[in-house]
Length: 248
Image 1 (cartoon, rainbow, N blue to C red):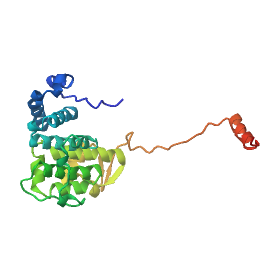
Image 2 (tube, helix red, strand yellow; image 1 turned 135 degrees about the vertical axis):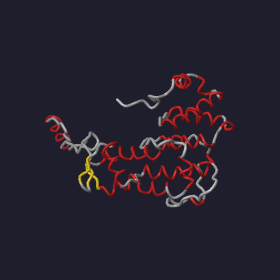
Image 3 (tube, rainbow, N blue to C red; image 1 turned 90 degrees about the vertical axis):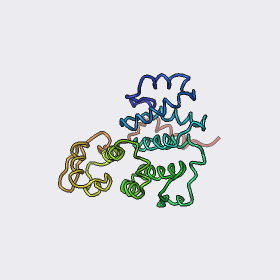
């Protein structure tokens, strides 16, 4: 049985009480939720349900919205690949933040560096999410390293790159049994000893020369599908009989 959407194992009791009561719609809880987002960024925890509740409060009370907190929520959503959390967050943002600037109208375009308002920050993170959700991992790292503003956007989330690598590895492990070392190095943006350590210690995969071997699991196991139709003879005979019946 899957884990429920509103479950978070490290959620504090006072946050749990707010989410399960009417106070989740009380503007006075905004500061509590904002502090909790910061706590998630520092400790590596993630609580999608609480973050969406805060974005809903911002939706009802735009004057209470903080750009930095919105950005951190989106960045944390990126680290939960391949869940749809990032898209859920976008649907709670004001429409004017979702309109792509002219320089972002093509999939390969990247906004210019510099002091960007929240709208541009959202668009930059949207580009990263597009790469991740499309399994364009090499392009994700290239884009992330292409502009100092990207580094500023993800700076508050402790261990952001490591979290992304773990998620990418999880997706790879569900899809393949073997993968070329050079390809995986590009996807994880790691080389040499750092790559070896991550693959062997974090992923617990085997390195066999230029091939990385992924252990068998229920997702990457090849299974044949046998389709059987159980049609009884009397049912078949009725069908043949009706074919020869004369229309009334």
